[in-house]
Image 1 (spheres, one colour):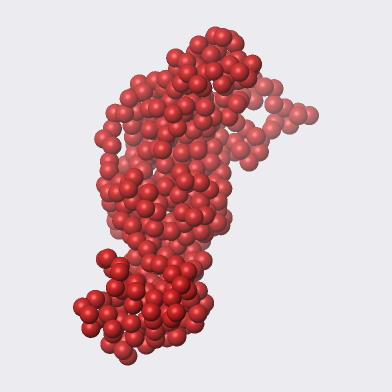
Image 2 (cartoon, rainbow, N blue to C red):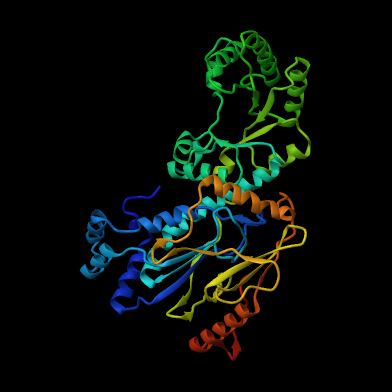
Length: 465
């Protein structure tokens, strides 16, 4: 969802740097790389998401008349700056991994090649598009892995940080394999399947649970799910069974019951026993209530008879890893390498490509970071980054969300060794000899240029990762 004055979707220093570059005539071609420096402690991979939104923002990038007048009112910019902002459009190139791709630390999710001012001005809007979507998609993929083939539904809208975040979360989770969302606006915007039951308030509004259940069954179009935990869960299941018998006599059926609180393992077993004994073995059990991938994994491992899961707040807020160490850093300017040497935030110079190798067992075996122009490594490697924007125009096919979902499913299936929730083994990501050699030369050049010696001892630097 692109704002009309998308140029203002930025931090002030991007604009003040642009003013300085203009005054200095420093607007040669720059390359910036967007990547995650480190994976969170509880993540073994990230799922790149938000790339399509980032590219839409680049297409819409401009400062409209109101934006220019606002900037004029700040009294921070010269008339020449404002004239430039009024004319500027993104005219550069972008290389990106596919939406839904598996990525690891220091691997570019996208790289921008453009005149310095354009490349710098779009930093914030690109990071904003990719960061939250990637955080949610990455957690969502873990929920899908934990469910072991059982459907998972997203319903975090009421606690996302705003309307746009709710749409992003619904799209991101569908991309990684969720069955549906409760978010009706997302259903409309992205053509997603929507699903839902009733709230506890509906049950409480009737004299008895059984009355409420019969009302749901008689008035609901489509699949009927009964929420059974308003008062006492197993009493609720028994009331649901009585209502199911009445509804069946009138030609209607209930497809599922929903457990939303308590010991979901024990309650699901007791509920399954009650349903089976009453002849409703085809009625599914749907569980929700503060779930995340860890809780789902425990329930699946315990063989709890739960057929589907609903995940909300902890997913939509990516509660255990809400912040990714994601950065957008310059790697080349005017044909010369650029890098950062500071402790914990050092960067690899030069435009890059990521090469991914498929092993003989049909599973991905390793990634190699290399220079963008160097030949591919020997073996069954394929490149992850593809040029998707050329001189400001999209130059690659735009896939539908359904196609991106299928593409993600095919790729994630080749990472089975790294999908378990608790695993500790780390996927190997190496650096090509050519990139390592070029980077070390760039580091040495910076050290000489800056005189980085202290008491005769050279400052040390190792490539990130």
